[in-house]
Image (cartoon, rainbow, N blue to C red; front, side, top):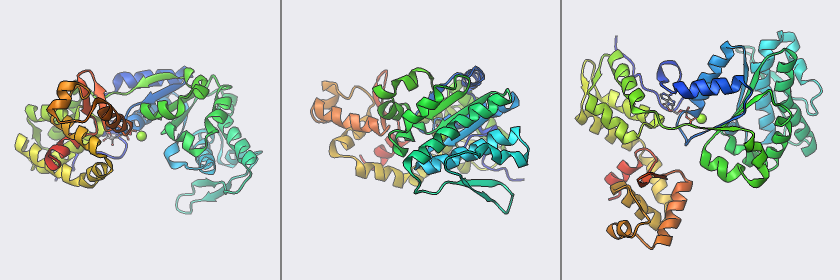
Length: 379
Ligand SMILES: Nc1ncnc2c1ncn2[C@@H]1O[C@H](COP(=O)(O)OP(=O)(O)O)[C@@H](O)[C@H]1O
Ligand SMILES: [Mg+2]
């Protein structure tokens, strides 16, 4: 039987697609069990949601109730109310109450949700129409935010409320952090877990005004996956699917991706496609895989390039050729860069988009494969 490509990128890394993160998983599970609030931050696609998902599976086995809402899917307060109601119904009320009693938890909401039944599987959905008065929708949200603590508390169960892509909170409504904070402060026993990118969390939410909010939460940073864990994972996936990966090829992959989870799975996916059954992944096949990957990401990178200003493009070209101290005079001269202040502006903007980051040895392009693309297409 022909094996399927064992690498996955884009969706959640579940089961066999998930590797490592042993310590982080341990820590997160313990924190939630302690009712400790946590901010889990990392750049995009580092595996925050996948890690939380895994932690939720372990927590469920320990009888903890875990309600999750992704704020990327809730552009308005009404939508947020809908997703909260959904999570409360599915993840909290359903394990606690019999079907007939579940909807009662929403009794007394200032705005009553419209409940719909999916004819295919009988599952319930919730909608809150737009056009209610601000006070009414706020009161409804407040009540919904209180419910997890109350329902779980009544039954002596632990509960976690996970807010993914939390940096979006300020886009939904400027006053929303304040409203949430007021409710969450009264729930020391609930573990609130906020997922998001540090840069955006810090820039948009961690303002003076919201500082008390964050002081109460433990910060947990998710880094790349170490080679010592990622290399055996890649080996095993190739071996299980009737192929092999030469050690120097695996090392080359991780050097290209810096162990970034999404990028590594993506490159491995393309490499696997280049490697026939019962064959080895070789450096030549890796080159071909990278070329294909860059073609498939071409429109994404082109868009980044089009949006970049002249100085930003110069900085990207310089960093693609040589990561290092961009502000240094020698570096600027070598790469024909503008004045230090001009470079600073360009780098600041690129950092803001999480395309470039500063490491111990100076600046580097952190958007996976962008450096390779710039070297191929823009030099
Ligand atoms: N622990 C992991 N092991 C292997 N691959 C992972 C892991 N975590 C994430 N990935 C890869 O990264 C991709 C993005 O993960 P995701 O959890 O959506 O990241 P985030 O929420 O930080 O944006 C996944 O589709 C998968 O390819
Ligand atoms: Mg995510």
